[in-house]
Amino acid sequence: MKTNLYPLLFKPVYKDYIWGGTRLDTKMQRNTGLSRCAESWEISEREDGMSIVENGALAGMSLADLRIHYGRELLGDTAAADAFPLLIKIIDARLRLSLQVHPNNRNAAAASGEPKTEMWYMLDAEPGACLFAALKEGTDRERFVEALQQGHLEDTLHRLPAAAGLALFVPGGRVHAIGEGCLLLEVQQNSNTTYRVYDWERTGDDGKPRDLHLDKALMVMDWNDHHAEMIQPAATAPDDPRYIQLFGSKEHTPLNAHLWSIVSCDYFRVERVAFENTWRQQRSTNRMEIWYNEREAVTVNTAAGHLVIPAGRSCLMPAGIQDVEWHAPQGTAKFIRITLPETGC
Image (cartoon, rainbow, N blue to C red; front, side, top):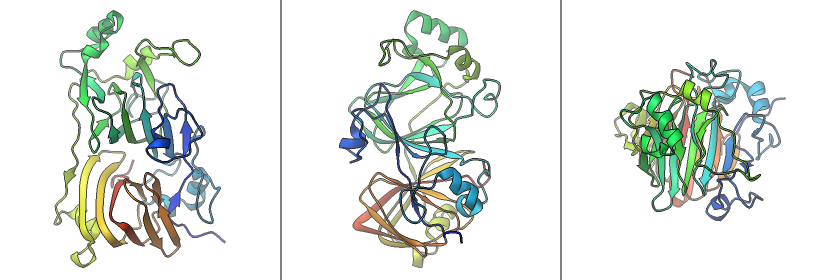
């Protein structure tokens, strides 16, 4: 007999890279077991970082097995059947990441990689923290390579001030780097293809320079990408169809219910949701949702079970669950809600 699905937490997979920090332990109260933790893979169907169910009767089951056994009941009508479509991470950059680029759906195969479009939602930023993204106007391949060779590559890039609550969209093909002092939530296509362009003249833990992938990076870089800006989440009006689709009619709308749009693209939609006290959500059962809890612990009740979502954790709400009761014992709940686009991936 198949176990009924319920809201799912997964055991985070922690990654130690040279630029990682300590805020997953000190700020987010994780017990990473690492002296330096760069990433937490929150929801992932990758062999090098497979998510394992943490709670309930399905504890110990991998996300890959969940997808195979439950299919649309887990993912909904819009998800691809051969792999979980997204990878959700938390990134703590004590030091600046390498300058890099990912392929997109058009050029990934030619570069022997997987397409990767992503977005970053800033959870915290130290004073002066920034992100690098896109090429300054007038920077073509020749000028970019010349700047790289002469050691002033940063002059060709947009430097964007980072602050908590802002976001940045990074389509495949956009050259980019996360600056030191940034703590962020990353939503991306299920891909682990990264082509390093430049690593700021540093060495790895072994004292040697880390590998670069300049040839492939130059192959997939979008040379017409000259504009990038931080995104301020945009409030959605109560009469907007998306607001009504989420919160329902007025009699079901929770106290101080707010919805903000952050990023919508061909691969994912990211929104911010806030409400007070108790909310009974009547869900469409044709799509999954991922809920990242920004604040205090929130309780969620469904016909299949009860779950407390701790602050700073990500919950996967299976597509087949209809009615959900959310309860914020501290008064106000604030979530980042991640869904798949209605047109699919």
